Every structure is written in structure tokens, then in C-alpha cells.
Length: 302
Image (cartoon, rainbow, N blue to C red; front, side, top):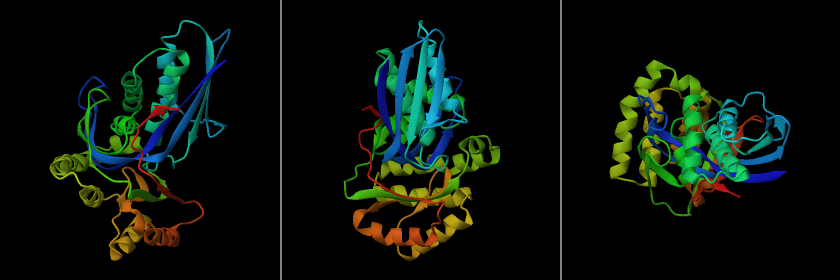
């Protein structure tokens, strides 16, 4: 029996442009900007020789009811393995699922790194991450999350594509910033990527904001442009709007995660407590409040 463990940070996208016209999934992706956080997904993979190849996927200890992306990656790796194995996968997910925290991409990326390690395939980190990217694109669960989570930090995705093909630029930011979030619920990414009217709205503004941020790569501009994009899309729910309104009254920078019914802020540490007071006023027992450090390392074997 062999075991490997890998971690991928979660990721919050502030704004983006869909770039999925290419036939090759490695060339598909998004341009945009976002931040990786030290709350994410830790994936443990255990393998043992067996008379028949099989796999089991668990999320936080429970058998996964739906794990399309993870299944895609497991099958892609097993295609290169001649022997029969029983593969046990457990994703420990520390961020809200489907709420704009990059959980699908983090599951895919950490799984690809762990499978590469446990099977000793000697793929480079970029090659393993490319398999995760392909899975996300083909399953329509994401476009630019994997490349962002692979490198970490506060980033601008200036060229679409998988790790090794797409291009990111890091926005300089100090350790005096943290990410604070209030999550009300989920918005399925697949639904967003399949809505033609929404795709038009996304691409009408997303690319312009990427170009503007590349000229003035500042944390303050990232938050301002994220809010401008969220307002433009028209997806802000009543619950999110109420939080945004109160944060605006206190001059605390907030926007909506892309894509989820969640509020986020890239904020100075000395302002966090004031923002958390607002979050707690609007949170219910089913809400998630997160304060996380920025992850500057990106996905890795642990």
C-alpha cells in the first residue's frame, strides 16, 4: 500500500473573460484576476495492488455522490498504469463548495499531484496540473482556476490556457492583507458557462478590466474592478446586496465571488474586525465566514 498527500489553495476570482473558442482544451481558459487562499483542499490518495482496477472517492470522509472531475482525472492516470490497483481518494475540503472558492479546481489539482506522486509517473508539476486543467475544461466546472491555484498569490491571468501555456502576472502584495468572506450559497459554474446571454455580458467587460489592471496592478484596483464587474453582471442577490451596502457605508472594499452567492474582501488586517461585525449581523447558521491568509506557494505535495 502506498500513500501520497497534496494540497491546493482555494481561489477567489474577482472578474474574468471567457476564452474557450480553441479546440485544444490546453489552450482554452480565461483571462481574469483573483487571489489564492490558505484554505483549500487536501487530497490523500492511497493505492494497493488488486485483482481488478477500482476506485473510491470520498469528500470529507463521506462517499462522493457526484465527483465528475475527480473521476475524469483518475481514469486519465489509470490509462497510463498497466497493473490493476484499488485507488482510494479522500478530498478534505475546507472551503464552501460551489460558492466561488475554487473548490473544484483545488480538488482536481491536488488529486493530479497526489496521483502523480503515488504512482511515481515523474510528470512535472506543470504536466500534472495540465491534466487537472483539461478535466475542469471538459467537465465545464472551470476555466482559469487551476492555473491560478498552481502558482498562488494575487494574480492577473493575462493569457488564457493551462499551466505552462497560459500566462499570469503576480500583483505585489504584503502580508498585511488577508481575505475575508461570507458565503450564503452556491451558483453552479456549469450553468454560468452555458448561459449565452451571460457569457456576452462577462466578455463585454472582463477583458477590458484585465487590461486596465495589468497597467495598474494594485490590490486596491483589483477590488474596485471586481466590484465593477459584479455590478455589471447583475447576479448580486438580495442577501449579498445588503452586505455590500453596509460595507460601502463603512468604506470597506467588498465584492461578490465569481461565481457564488458570497461576499469577499481583500482587506488590511486592521480593518478585518469591523468587516466581520457586518458579516456576523447577516450570517445565519448555514453561512460560512472565512478569514484566510493569502497562499503564495500554490499547489504542492505535503
